[in-house]
Length: 88
Image (cartoon, rainbow, N blue to C red; front, side, top):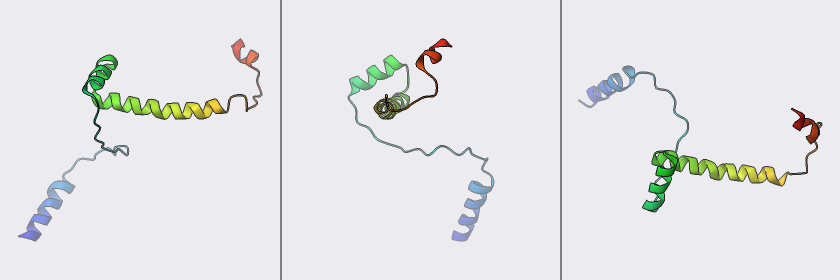
């Protein structure tokens, strides 16, 4: 009986399955947030809770990248002047 179930499982769930797009590497999280913050964020952004949390995390990641770029300010030399860039 156990062998029959294993074979049935292989046929039903592997051979008949349609090709599935590979999803990007995701991580499921549980977040406890104040209700008012969630309601305000989703209302103002017109996004779902998941999309609002994702957008917030992207903003935090972008802030870090921007800070690293800001620290380079004035330390790099360019072959074109600011005056020439503004001409366009």
